[in-house]
Image 1: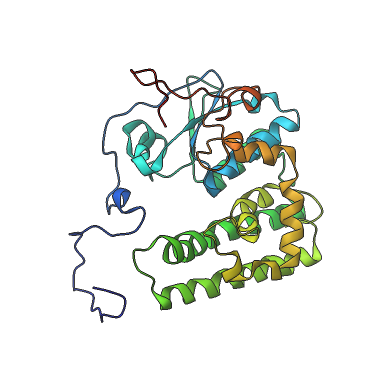
Image 2: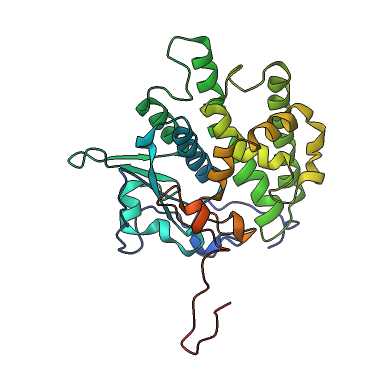
Length: 302
């Protein structure tokens, strides 16, 4: 059946064929683990299991920002979860996040009472509160409400960008005009929402950089630079001049540059730090510095 074929939904939907598209091999209508696989645990109290998708980048940027602010307790181990291979369905990962999505965080500061945190927005709030409301205005301040409003705006809006526009524009097995038009319209409306806010405010919550910016930037900042879905020209992202200003401003932050590298598996090898277990790893363990594996015959595996 193609996009031009009329479709009448059955009375009861049954999962009886692959869904198609780029992620068909990991899509399924049930939860729970598919295999037994324990999670590794490093030496720091904070253990992150993630991948450098926009949601994953939120948390690594947050952790690097906390370290830059002098919060030594924010040192962390970041373990790579290859979602295309279904590693998020291992029993250990599902125990941390029953929704089987990255990122997932385990706080082992108290070994007797480890704390699991899942959903990227919840992780940002948890870390901000853990470290004395770092990058989160104090409760009762108007900026606190503004910050949380934009944080939750992003959590509700991003599915239209990723699961909606991104899926049908870039990943679906067929191009469906109605679906692409529907989600392109919504994404452009969202960009306009951001542009209007940033026309009146340096950052989303006001004059200060907060977890709201950390949450929104990996999705809409990267989109504004035309670096996701190859859709910059299609969406005319350059029209949103205030979003462009904000995007460039945040991109220059050293902690943001570091956070974007963690758990990254694509792009320039110099920008990929598959796992991070120490601050020095940025200087010594990016993919351009990691020797390729040797095959039994002595040749390098490509």
